[in-house]
Length: 462
Image 1 (tube, helix red, strand yellow):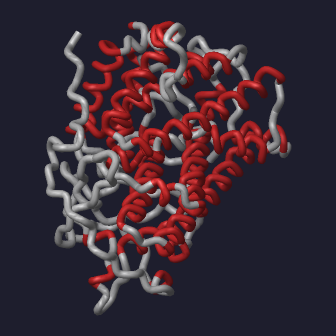
Image 2 (tube, rainbow, N blue to C red):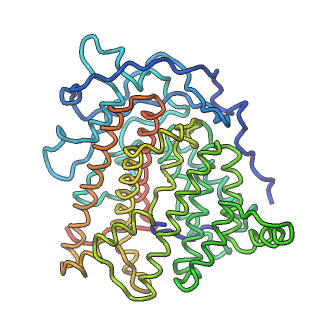
Image 3 (spheres, rainbow, N blue to C red):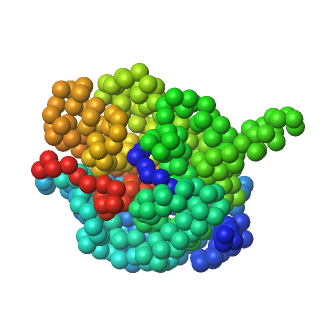
């Protein structure tokens, strides 16, 4: 997993309600109406930047049938939040604006009925300020192409932070007392609220929050400098993975496996977080998550193998490793956290898989850039994109870092262009909403890195 920090009796918290009720956003379930086709050629006529519209009011996921979105009158258009370009005067060609244009629909006389996403509901509960979080602490990497986001809802941030700490301390005994400050400094409540603005309830946000904390605990305690080591990592990861993808064996050996799930903090965290998730998600959503976690673990193993042999990969090899050792498991569950389901056949489309892969790749390079100085100050030799560029392409530290910014920007533009193409090719409401959710996760992930000055500081290269 990308750079992480240590993460870890009151009664257990209320789990997400199975499909009959969503606590703070009840809504009748009806069938989505037919969607008007998006006419070809209209993208070029739009005037970027525009803001993604508010999503439909979420409904609980009800296995095995996907949940339809309720029909509501169009919501008022929010104030635009523009992209921050990597070079001047590129806004008009911004593919991210194209993505937002597709989700918003065409503009001009007679086009109101073609505004696809805006037809499906009022703003999300707990509305946030439409202004970018310009007052938040921290600054963006200069030249980094990104989109400002509204400040995460402080009420939700506080509640998620309270619940996740209670879970970490009381339910899974995740971390020793001396790690408490680092757990708090991780600011996971702000992180998850910012990445999932369409989550209908705090219970839904907690699904993502527990999984995020569990993933980081495995990374820290198995891979990194809080007891981690590349030696023997494969065996530890395999046994931890059985908490996500259960071991099916004989009656004689099953009890020993079940007992092993409580044997260390990472496995306790995986087991508990996945238990909450499978109760709220559909079977296909749970299996999708397991698959992406297997990808993550394979990336961990590649990085560990290079550490054991002292190998510095070629730049393309490093980027290939980072396509697996990256944030992908987080945005891929955006529909489950939003309380709906992107059907499995639509999720499996090659163009959807490209969108998700590019989102994971771009967000992971964001992590490399913001954690650069932190990793330089840590013991050992940490691979990140600037380090690999410096060694393999014989660049100065500054030039390698600035080239890594360019790599990120190209990946981010490619993600937004691919999402725009998919939205135009397949204007199904759940596809449009899922693309919006992934884009929101990408933006929220950057904002968390930018503002988490407890963990990150920028190098003095400008």
